[in-house]
Amino acid sequence: MRKQLVALAAAAAVLSLPLAAQAQQQIKSVGITLGTLGNPFFVALAKGAEAKIKAINPNAKVTALSADYDLNKQFSQIDGFIAAGVNLILVNAADAKAIEPALVRAKKAGIAVVGVDVAANGADATVQTDNVQAGEIACQFIVDKLKGQGNVIIQNGPQVSAVIDRVKGCKDMLKKAPGIKILSDDQDAKGTREGGLNVMQGHLTRFPKVDAVFAINDPQAVGADLAAKQLNRKNIVITAVDGAPDIETALKTDTQVQASASQDPYMIAQKAVEIGQDLLNGKKPAQQMVLLPSKLVTRDNVKDYKGWAAAR
Image 1 (cartoon, rainbow, N blue to C red):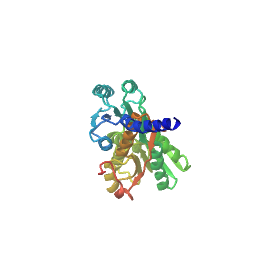
Image 2: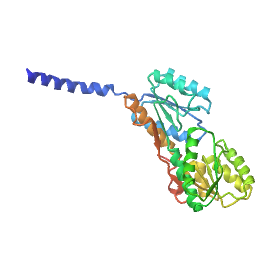
Image 3: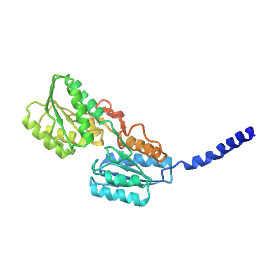
């Protein structure tokens, strides 16, 4: 009798295996809402997400939309995703805190939600660049170039988590060099080329000696370089964060931009999709915030850099 029971139990276990496999949820429909698809960063992010989704399920439906940094528009897009029955949403939040009610609605509908590039309250997880580390390596480059002596400007930006973290990392490195003087660290250049130009013009007018500038992103760095050219100010080391196509050009041509701590939007998206697939099957990431390391792109290594638009 005992042997019969053991045999029956073993048979039941074998029979249950296909059922378990069938219970495994698969990504079937994905909604992606991003800052703006006019930015090559988000174009690469969307491509990375779609490539990973199709590798998991070639028949999955993928809808990538541009929120244009409009919170109300993003709310409407998320509600549309819920109505369409997606089972995964990737969100680049227009406002990390205000987005929460929409994401809570999505999760109540049984949808896995993963933030990309910036934090998003209410998301199951977020994948972004390690922005503190990015600021550290960009500003360590400045310290090394100046041999620990000189006047430095930190060109700040919109006070979102990514910018705050980059500035923190930069300051942490600059503080280790007593010979470095920070002339300014609180001017918001709006994350744009025009903003970088305007703020840099003001700084160069105000300060007769500027040895280096850390800009919180590449557009600001390009704008800062343009201002230096217009005012005929030379020998300024300019670094930033992004590794964008524009900065690749700047590093290969006659500019004062010397380095950028890169982000990899393609890999951010791929990791977010992996986490989304796991979430659908009850597996949460070890940490809610997943940080991907940044690499420094310089004039010396830019030729080997696989940028945002590179074929994958």
